[in-house]
Image (cartoon, rainbow, N blue to C red; front, side, top):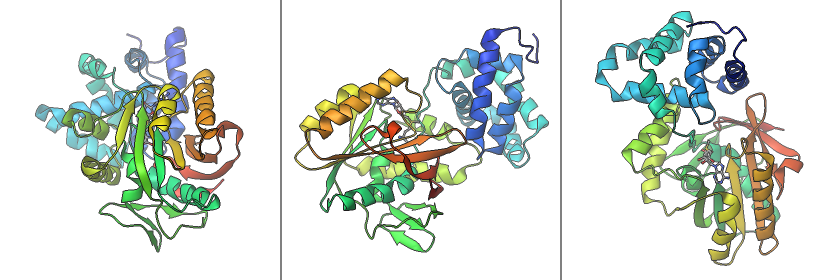
Length: 339
Ligand SMILES: C[S@@+](CC[C@H](N)C(=O)[O-])C[C@H]1O[C@@H](n2cnc3c(N)ncnc32)[C@H](O)[C@@H]1O
């Protein structure tokens, strides 16, 4: 097989372009960034990627490798090598990774049908001050109904149950603390918004109490991010006792039914790193569903979706694509900054 991409195979050229487009989003993982840059030039690896149906395929491939590593004791000899490579990603690390993927192609591809449903609870640290501000602006003092669109395992709906630390400022209380650098000097609320109900909408809700599904969520965490892994585990533990309803299906179809079933009171609806890959007609359908609910009862919508460059914008509006960004935030919630 030809190792280096020649440009003769249009499918591989397209796959390589999608990997290159993903590279900026891996800026927080030197290892994955180094792998992606090399994969984009490597025909054998691009052939594996092209056989992965989910999106982004590279994220699924990397998570599949992580999962296989944790599943198989026989790989213990390879694993420390990965840990070492994390400190100095380079050609040697890539060769080990490449050999692993090509040797275990069938096992990797068997996991390739899984989905990228990374659930990062620290995104709440970026969303929460904006949601609190919008609620205050509308005079919504009491508990609101929270709806998270594209909620994955519903960990974002723990927003009212965790503690936040922005430098010296602490907001809220809870056994899990989310640290976020408030680079924008954004006004912070004195208390966390209170939720009367919590509903997660997802095409395929993840049951984080199922060990196999929790292991996949863990595998989606990038290898350098030990803090994220610890947070994920803590959030999954909190999720077990939290009163969160998960509703399966396309949010455009489920939202009207869910909203109609909620008791009176305002709705705060948000989505984080969830809808950016949807085609325009699917986004329009969700916008229309949100607008229809908002015509019947008070509703605010906050969108936290990726932008080219690796960060994500927060926009407030029933049709957020036509609203200007109010702030921008780190894709995993590490900082919040001026738009
Ligand atoms: C990357 S996950 C993000 C999870 C979570 N919002 C977070 O920030 O950690 C994106 C989720 O959006 C869901 N999703 C995508 N399109 C959707 C739609 N039309 N309706 C409901 N859920 C959708 C996917 O199934 C996936 O679980």
